[in-house]
Each structure stands twice: as structure tokens, then as C-alpha cells.
Image 1 (tube, helix red, strand yellow):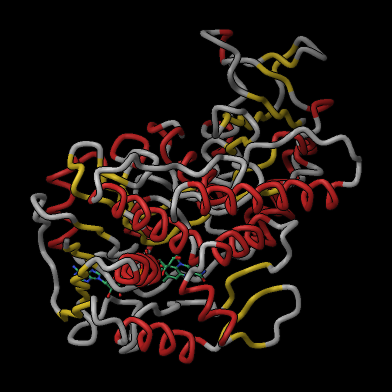
Image 2 (cartoon, rainbow, N blue to C red):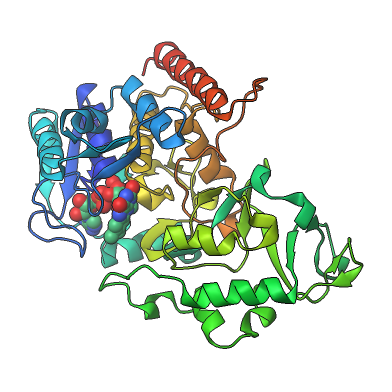
Length: 435
Ligand SMILES: Cc1cc2nc3c(=O)[nH]c(=O)nc-3n(C[C@H](O)[C@H](O)[C@H](O)COP(=O)(O)OP(=O)(O)OC[C@H]3O[C@@H](n4cnc5c(N)ncnc54)[C@H](O)[C@@H]3O)c2cc1C
């Protein structure tokens, strides 16, 4: 049995290694080292294109839990990360060159893996294939993927608004209503009076922004103007845009407020809310500082910050099932950042799940989805159950992980209990499903 893997990045190396170890012949394609995308430069595979940090180490943090779940499943990428780590407090950071070299050597040592340096420009749907060419997938291939899955279901950049934890919104300053009371009261409205708006506005227009990469000039993001740029057009511009107060009466006063931010639920469990129209390029620290000036958000926990960057990804809720398999082409799995997960270890997680399921698919066995009480399972659950109309990539966070019932009041202890529960589930799945 043979599988094509397109892209030897974080997801591709994890998937290829898993399959090769289980006696599947793998053809691993990458354009490297003949050509590089705009962000890649190392001749080795599994290159970390930006930060050398794989985020938090503690299992009470969702990123820490995800890494531990991956270790339980013998992830190659985690093995390399632990082997090449450098001191960085509570985070797991690596020497990026040693990290990529370790993984590349492991891949090269597998007799079942044939490495082919080639730019793939189209997908042969008759052959079992895992596509994991990442957020900077080359143009011809991305165009052909779009033709196969549907032009509307491939996105070329991520311009997303921040997402906050529902439990951290102060409901003394927020209310549910839809504009003009039309339809269901799905929006959570966060009003501001004139003084509050003035203070907010002044901080917003002066807040620090992320410097875009040279391949990401502002033109790329036309059509989704960052809130801070819109604000600079005039003091009242937001009042006709994302802070429009018309048609919304504050139940406390029975009157319209000066400005109202609307929040919309991001998942079916209603645990995460999106700041509608607040796509932004502010530094993360500035987002929490400035957006927390909105009274209902004064204690907001930011599950995901707004970002604007070049990022090619599919509309997973339409295209994929929970196994990272393309619904319309069962031979094809799409994984890594291209599948709509966001981040290094999230890409690894999706790569591993796709490989586990590719093997089951080849053996005519039932495919598996990890429980959404685990971080690995929560990511694939999110990808396939998010609202396709507003789909944006997602990282590991507690907002997407299904909560178990816990009685304690200590937040960190509860997270640790939940994390241990998730790790036991991963162990059970590993044994019971022959992973
Ligand atoms: C500029 C930038 C900075 C980022 N910074 C961070 C960060 O700091 N932290 C974080 O957690 N995440 C970051 N990400 C997001 C993401 O986690 C990484 O991009 C991650 O490497 C994605 O893993 P992947 O396996 O999906 O893709 P990649 O690791 O990018 O691997 C894709 C591979 O496919 C190859 N390829 C592309 N097109 C073709 C083709 N047509 N044919 C053959 N091969 C091809 C590439 O050469 C590459 O080796 C960043 C993304 C970008 C673009």
C-alpha cells in the first residue's frame, strides 16, 4: 500500500513517519530544497518559519495539554522538540535548526519513505494522498485545490477578529438582542456611552500594530479593513460600522446607546464569542488592553487574538469530516494549517490524526475521531462543527474543549483534572483502537 504526502512540513513529517512505521510506503513530496516559499529557507524539513516556541508546557494550559497528548501518541515532532529544547521558562522552545535536522534525519532513515523534491501542482484523486502544503501552498496547487473542492471554499488570508471566553464577559454590561428585534436574539451586545467611546477611540487609534511581512502588504487584506484603520478615518466611522448602535435598545435604560459592539457565538456550545467586525492587526497585548476598555469586556479572557496574515486554508466545515478526510474525495486527506487549524502543534495534531485515519481507511477499518474532551479531538470537532459562514482557523484553547463536570472552585486545579481526564482518554483510544 502506498500513500502520497504533499508537503514535508510539521504535519507532513508527522503523518509520513506514522505511516512508514506501520509499513506503508510513503512518497513524500516537497519543493524544498530546489525552491522555497516566501517564509521557508532551511533545507531541512519541518521548519519553524517564525517563533521557535511551541508555547506553554503546563497541562493546565490547552497548548501544554495538546503537546502531552501528542507525546502519548509517540509523536515524532514532540520527540524532536523534547530532544532539542532550549531553556524558556514555562514554554517549550527549541533550537530550530537542530529541531528540523533531527526530524529530517528520522524521515530519511525510514526505508518506507521515498523523498521526492518536486513542486506538486495538482492532486490525483485516484491515489491515497495527504495534502499538507501549509499556509503558503504554492499558487498552482492552491488554484487546483480550489477547483477540486469549490472556489468559494479556499481562503487566501486570515483576517480574523478576537474571540473571548463567554464566561469572562461581564453580563452586568451586556445583553442579548438582535438589531430591531429581528429574528432570534443571537447577538450579545456590549454598549458604551459617549465618554467610554471617546476613551476607547483615543486608545484604539494610537495602539501599536504588528508589522506585516513583505509578502503581506495591506492590499492583500482589502475588503476586511482592520478596526483600527477604520477608526482612523474619523471619530464617528465606527459608529456607522462595527459599533453601530441603531436598532438596539439597552434593556437597562430602554434607549439606544452611543456605541454598541456585537458579539456572536463562535461554536455550538456557545462558550466562545467573536467580536463582530473587529478584525485587527494590533499587537496581542494592545488588543487585550484596548478592547478590555469596553465595559462588558473589562475582564475578558482572550481565547484567540485577532490576526491578519497570509494564510491559505480551506473551509473545513464544508470540505472535511472529523478525520481530516475530504468528504467529496475519500482518498484525499487535507491536514496541517491548510485544513484550518492554526499553529505549529495544532498542525502536528492534525497530521497525526490524518495518518491514523489514512491507515484505517487503507485497511477498510472504521475511521476514528478522538473525543472532544481531548484537545486533539476538540480541534477536529471545531473544524467540522464551526459555522461555515464565518469559519476562521483555530488554535488549541480551552474554549473548544468540551468541559467535564467538575466541582472544585480552583480554576487551575480544575484544568489539571480535566487535562488528566483527557490524557487517560488518549491512552484508552491508543489501546482500544490499535493506534
Ligand atoms: C510567516 C508565518 C509565520 C508563522 N508563525 C507561527 C508561529 O510563530 N507559531 C505558530 O504556532 N505558528 C505559526 N505559523 C502558522 C503555522 O503553524 C505554520 O505555518 C506551520 O508550519 C504549519 O505547518 P504545516 O505542516 O501545515 O505547513 P508547513 O510547515 O508550512 O509545511 C508545508 C510544506 O509544504 C511545502 N510545499 C508548499 N507548497 C508545495 C507544493 N506545491 N508542492 C510541494 N511542496 C510544497 C513547503 O515547502 C513546506 O515544507 C506561521 C505561519 C506563517 C506563514
